[in-house]
Figure 1 (cartoon, rainbow, N blue to C red):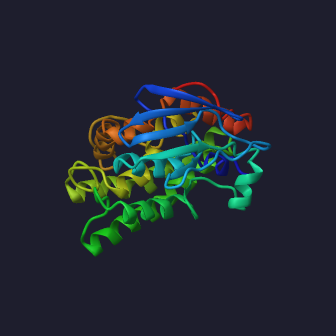
Figure 2 (cartoon, rainbow, N blue to C red; figure 1 turned 90 degrees about the horizontal axis):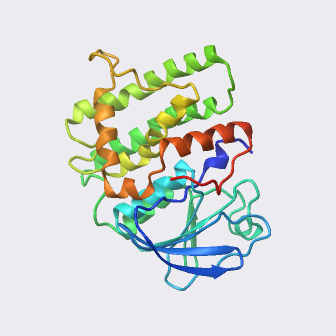
Amino acid sequence: MGVWNQMRGCRRVLNSSTVMFAGNKQGFISIRWSTAGYSMDTAKHLGSGSECPPLKPGTLRVYSMRFCPYAERTRLVLAAKHIPHEVVNLDLKQKPEWYVAKHAVGKVPALELDNHFVPESLVTCDLLEQLYPEPALYPADPWAKARDQFMVEQFNACINTMHKTLRLSEDAEAMQELAEKSRKRMRPFEEELIRRGTPFYHGDHPGMLDFMIWPWMERLPAFQTLGLAILPEQTAPSPDSAKHLREWMTRMQGHPAVKDCLISTETHSRFLSDLRKGTQDYNMEGN
């Protein structure tokens, strides 16, 4: 399995207090309050040999991994829409047999509710938009919505560049080439903010496009510690500057849903460094 596929999940680091702990055979489950309301996280990532935690009728569950940007997408939408849910974190190196039985590919995120099970980040986020239409994260205008979906699709090129970084070690020349390619691929997102002239891509508040690209933007400073400087240096404005993207990132960091999911640059850097070496610990400490 590639190192990037092993990142497909993420446990949200909540800015709220744990109010109860309940024991189970895998360790502990923490019950928390967040902007999304009632939420339950498995304290540790469940792996091979574990048992699937019982799912109560009517309870929405998201399968995740703490450091996965794809699963963070789903967590962001859950938080933005204040949807009560529980989280089960999974060890993606030693996947639980019961999860592979549900989803043969074994990736996260996935949503489960009663007899329904749906995987994949974009699919789960669009499903949540349909099931919980308020607040709306897509524009009402079909053309504007299609534009947002196109931009999300275009962002895959940026993700692929970051993916390649994890396969390189100390090749400074290759890193420089990747950085230059990354800046070119990121440029349309700077231009889109300029074109729209709004604080967020969705307008005055973040929407689906904002939340779908944020997990990788959150990790940009951590990727820089690996040698991949994607955004231009903060110098005098120039045609290649990313002034609007940097300002957007600052605004995103202050949004309650993002705060619920945010992991520090230091912790991201430690995880990415270990992931590159294949020694990642999904249960590593750090916020």
